Amino acid sequence: MNDGRLRWTVRLGAAVIRMIASTWRFRVANREGAIAAQAQGERLIYTLWHGELLPLLWLHRNEGVGVVISEHRDGEIIARIAETLGYVTIRGSTSRGGSRALIGLMRELENGRDVAVTPDGPRGPAHVFAPGAAIAAQRTGALIVPTRASTSRAWRLRSWDRFMIPKPFARVDVVYGAPTAVDAGTPREAVDHAPRLQALLDTLALPAR
Image (tube, rainbow, N blue to C red):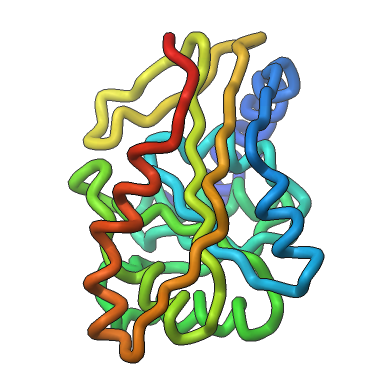
């Protein structure tokens, strides 16, 4: 995709998202722990499943959060749209501990910025927690905040993550877990925390649909 076509795709995509998202009705639960941690100067790593990314991007717009976006072609479109919503983008994948994205993620945390990671992205498998976020938390002292979203009605893409696009006027429920430290002496030990962090995401109580 050439630069001109990419710019128009981003403009159109951002406009459509703003038009639809402005009608969503959010119901937020258990965010108090994250807010209290922020007030105490803690840095946060929001972890969320890739398929639930869109409504959470809208909810946290203009908060200056750093978000990890993959470097493939579709990721470029998502990254530019995220930037129009007030995010700082960190490019790459955190699935490998030595990746450029992991270094960028830790840099933003060390500069005092909260970040967001989809630990099953960019290509899955869905709902499997890659260890990058755990390593970043261990190295920087940031707290992991598990975050889930569900909606009363949505379009679902035929992608590996069943990417969710809430329909106009849908109710969107967002639930936060308690901020959690990764108490590990080394990055290698932090990797062993990934199953526990995956369980924290999977057990967040979302409303039945």
